[in-house]
Length: 474
Image (cartoon, rainbow, N blue to C red; front, side, top):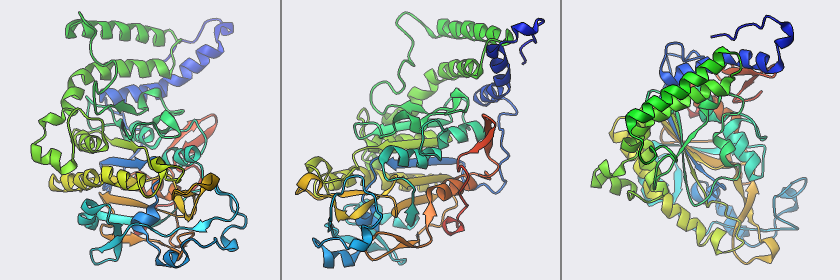
């Protein structure tokens, strides 16, 4: 559909030009939402291993050295001043002066035959460690939360880029006509540091931003009909609004946002039926709810994990869970290694292990990729901000651990290594752009060709870097 060219060239305003230019991309978005032919602007490889992704982001970044990469040498130097060699030319978010080394305070056990180690605070995860690919050598460029989260989820440390889920929504759409391609679930009591930009659509059509579901109360705000409005009347009102929006497009005054609005009205109307059924955890067996530790009606990470399984089962392409409370600085009992850290481990252990178990027994783990981790690592030194006597670790970009499971990853394996103090990667460094490239590869997408032209440049999720890492692949 094209806007008519004005008879008078003086009438060819900037608004007309931008509106006319946006229609082609807006049409792709609308076609994707309505399930029309030609909705996929990217060719996928026939060797795609994954159909769906469940991404579990621990906002604030867990101390993964304590959890999965223990360092016995730290016990020898516990409480001693940090060597000067580790402090030269180093920038910290909060550490001042010469910090003291901090050994792990919780026991860690070896699981399986491959040398994998998992903290004893995660006993359920220990039992399913054979499903995991443990990547101990992740690195990032950022050491503050918001930029590091943005880099991990959008490919850039600055605001304005599309999130990974939005790229996938635009690129390959949803397998479901009645649910969004990209759903976001939040637990832990707060939003991540970078806020809703982490599931924003950036310069992609607005229809591809993440749709936030709630695990307690009304699942999607304003989805229900107002009092006195039945479904037939709502259907007629949606049709009338969309007719008006299409007239605006035909007149050349509309933009991609107008087409996105049409698609969203249509999808929201269908979601009035599909969403209540999809989020009804009471429909699960008591055994399944116990597997996750889920309680219907309660806002929790456990409920969100069970909901994630239900959503990918129904064709949602990308489900992203954000769980806050992992910023273990040691300034108070609410963010220290001895109280908050074990509390958070207890909140995720059964649910994370239950998700992997449930996906496997339903045959979904074969084509669902599960990703777990934070935005950076934590220092092997105690932060001791302002002389605090609580134990905690500062931000650390040079190494951290992430976990992968499911479609196409090398289960039961350890990738990469760090030095004896957990300060630098010594083997197989994997940048966050490499992780993004590998996720796209598992979905059958070449990250180098997966681009969107904006302001004269072909942008991509991996920016100008990234490489598919065969070390992670089965």
